[in-house]
Each structure stands twice: as structure tokens, then as C-alpha cells.
Image (cartoon, rainbow, N blue to C red; front, side, top):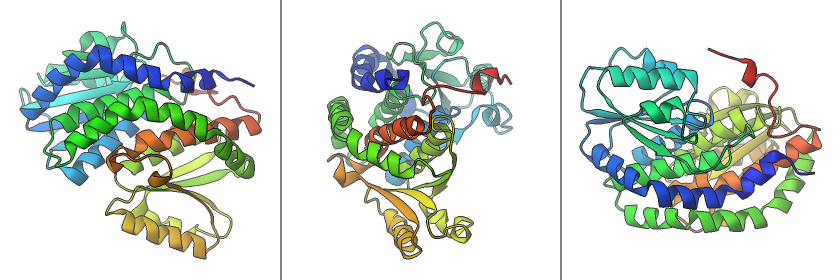
Length: 335
């Protein structure tokens, strides 16, 4: 058994190293632009918007940066855009051809907003048309989940935006970010067996709820939308931890599977209330604690948690006779 996703998981660390080596000068240029902008827009779809959610929430927890996230066409149809406004728009896309994200980039160019693209395909439209293109050096990625493109995208966003921020611990965060390739290598070796067993235990479940606070909500979104639904072909729903008591509380019954992330944020006080409630109701609760995996600034937790999650999804798909990198309908849908 060796699906394409396996090879791409193993390439994550080298992809990060190559991206930072080749693109740091451009990232520093964008950092300077961000420091002088009144507003930052982050735009993406699927896995790419999950990176935007994570970085936005990490910044909102730690800085006063004015930052907004839009999915592609929501930005395109945003009536509050103004021609020549002092803002910067950063567009994320694995292919650089995502139709709604590309349309939004073109709209931003029309409004003379400075556009930045972070994409994996050097010859793509987004790389060619953005004022400042940043290329993630992953080589072509074919598995639908987005492993190496996810970690390089989110790492670039952290590098650019936290370098421009007033976060009091930004020096430590940026130093920890440099260590992420080595940490990922260790996690790929050390988390496979535990998550293979977890996948075996949960292989017959059909729906999962995914909860996180702060930047872990973006990871919950990725886990539900592109890992569980696209990769493992399981129903899934992402929620902020604090929203457990709305909606889900009426479906949180005995043996319902729920995946919860705890990074010891101040807001994880509410996450732990959700954990306690889940245990009291005898849900099938899977808890990922950052302290079990790495000693890094907690705002970087999506870059850490994603590796054990990749193993979980990889084997969850396999135990259900699915290729975790294949698609059934995505390639046929055009907007």
C-alpha cells in the first residue's frame, strides 16, 4: 500500500525549506507592504481558505492588525472595495487557477489594490497576474488533500504577517517557524502508528464533528472540508469550540465522534468545557493536545496538528477502500 498522498506527505519538510530559501526576499517585500497598509485581505478556497482562517485568528488573538478573510467570489462581489484604497490582498491557491480566487485577484487589480499570490504552479495565471507572486516550491501536488502545499502556504502567511505585526512574542514565533521542517520530519516518523490505530477504531463512523479555538478553527475547517469529506469520504462539520453549545449540543449524544484541538490558548478554557461535556455524554472524543507533539509558540499549532491528522485520514481512507488522494467529482465541477 502506497498512495500518492504518502509521497507528498514525506516531501513536506523539503518543500518548506525550498520555499523559504527561494522566496524569503519576496516575503520580506510583502511584509514591508503589510506594515504600511491600512487593511489586509486574505482570499482563498478549500484548503487555501483554511490557512487564511488560521492566520487571521492567530493575528486577532495577538495583534491589532486589520485583517479580513474572504472566499473567492465573496471578495469579488464585496461592495466595500474602493479604487486605490491603501490595502493589500493576498490570494492563496494550490493550482493558481482556482476560478473564483483568480476572478477576485483580477478584481483587486482593477481596484489598484496591491495583489500578492501564494501558489504552487509557476506558470499559473495567479502567479503571472499578481503584482507580487510567491511560489511554494513543492513540485506538482496531485493528492486532493493538499499536504505540502498546505504547510508551505500557511508557513508563508505566518512569516509575512507576523513579521509585520506587533505581537510581543513574534521573535520566538518566527524562530519556531524555522524549526517546523525538522519538527514535521519527526512527527511523520512518530505519529503514524497511533493514528493508524485510531483510524482502525473509527473506520466505520460516517460523520465527525471537528472543534477548535483561535487558529485551530481553520485547521478544523480543513480537517472537515478537505480531509474528511474529500479524502476519507466521510461527512464532517467544523465548529469553533465556543459554538459547541449551539446546534451540536442537541446532536452530541453517546458514541457520536468528535475531534477537538487544545493548544492552551486563553480561549481554550471554553474548549475544555466542550471536552468535559463530551466525556460526560460519552461521545467518542478524540483530543489533540499541542503539548503532546511539540514545544512551539501555540499560535503555530495548525502546522503541528496537521501531521498526525494526515496519518489519521490516510489510514481512515485506506481502511474504507478509498485512495485518500483521489477525487470523484471535484475535477468535473467548473464555475
